[in-house]
Length: 216
Image (tube, rainbow, N blue to C red; front, side, top):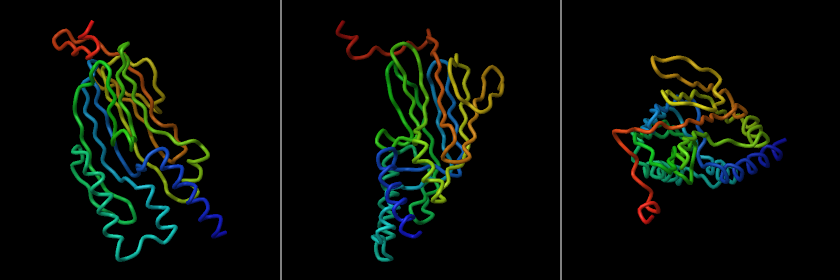
């Protein structure tokens, strides 16, 4: 029984290293996205550092190096200046607050946290589409996560006045001239958020041309 459990946690660590280094839990996150591509992204909750699970399994985490390992993870998160708060809760779990604001260019990719540890991506495309997509695990991998008791619970919202052409939200509510798309994440097997919006042209603030267009 113990051998099977250790084998599973080893597989889990390898899987998560391929997808994302961090697992969200006990969180509330919201993206406010205008029809022109202006955005404000917030996240408040826990982040768990997946690779350290394998180190605990291999007994590499000792009292004399545990604090240093936690500090290394904190520093890794702090590389992104959008984090307003990073507090260790032990064993690779951190309570964080995150806020990023900006405006998507004509073709751009931005993400929570960063591209090599992506939980959520915002991608604008040449045809005017803006695609919001959360990182998802394969069902088999998510099942392993659940069996190990490492849950993933939270709520994600997108509030927008834009022309949404596709989404998989569990609930949609009116909010003035906008709509709020809501995803309730109850476990690792939940459907991960995805939304596609067609951006309106802002006559007062035209998008800057791409470098390749300047040469045409």
